[in-house]
Amino acid sequence: ADPLFIDPYAAVLLSLDVADQTSESLVSHLMPSAEHYRLTTRYLDDTLQHLISRSDNFRQIVLLTDGMDTRPYRLSWPKMSIMYDVSPGRIFSTAAQQLRGAKIPRNCVLFHTPLESPDLQEGLCKNGFNGNRPSLWVLQGLPLPSSSSFKSLLLVISNLAMKGGIFIGEVPHFPDWTAAADMVSEQDRLENLFFTQGFRVSFVLYENVAKDFGLDLAPQREQCGRVLFVAEQLRFSDAQMESFWTHFERTEEDADEEGFEEL
Image 1 (tube, rainbow, N blue to C red):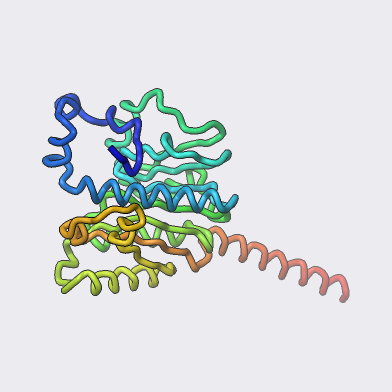
Image 2: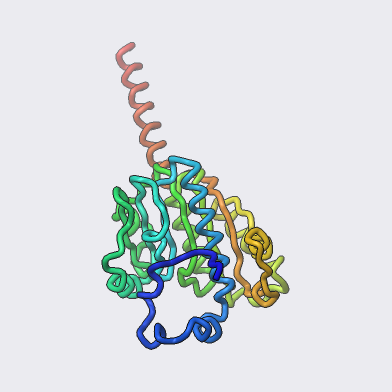
């Protein structure tokens, strides 16, 4: 009755047998975390829109998804926005077939890079990603089976994202971190993981997000093991470093030529 967000495209992504079920049945059986999902989606939508509306710099947006993210179609994007969807190729292709007719805003483009690409960094660059331009990264739904897979993802983003780039999203609970005694220790691990890859990170409590929307989050939802975060890239991207060294070498060459002329 009072939705946190409206997705006019979600229904076409349901199989026929699922689409025939009542909404109550869907919530109770197929999406036990529906409340949590809606809250996370609304928070990321709002944060994303706030960031791109307050700055003209963020025109490269990388969506790290499950392959069925409808944000390119249902959100408002500034002109000249370039969106990159990173997700499982088979799922994205199936969703794209179902979403035929859905359009992204005029003067915007959407590229897909399969998650299973041999070299994800190279794949994004081949699609036109520019490490000398600011970028905004959003993580929700991307399959991350272990902490090592998340570490590898952070490395790719650290190499590609220009200094000052923003990375927001939701980190799932990693089975290989089950030894963690509580969420505090798990957040410590995450913070260290972000830091070693060049990010300054802050974590967002689901209960605070729920309060902002006037909701009471059920206790079991808070213990789902997932973590909301906002991180900033503190390092220079590979492209920035390459530009720096190119400029440095040219400066040295010019200095050598001037010295030779004086002699």
